[in-house]
Length: 101
Image (cartoon, rainbow, N blue to C red; front, side, top):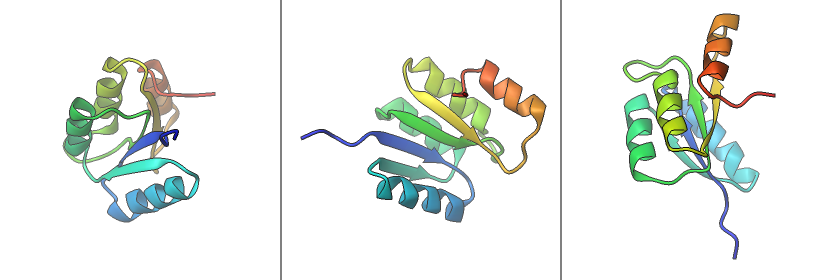
């Protein structure tokens, strides 16, 4: 039996994080939903995940810190999401290793 890809969702908006997790599960992924950047860092330290979806702006540990921790793990892909986008923040995230096409 093939295991489902694990997606770590890190977003301090609990309702948004839960919605993302539900949608991912409906598409066949195994979501792990967390509502703080610090919880995301702990999960990255202790667990194996295939993909990280992280909010950019969060209190305390932000999405760029989550991105950096995920990239240190090696082959974990990271998608940065935000409701407060700017060209500068998008370029910063891509330079730091966020997935882009």
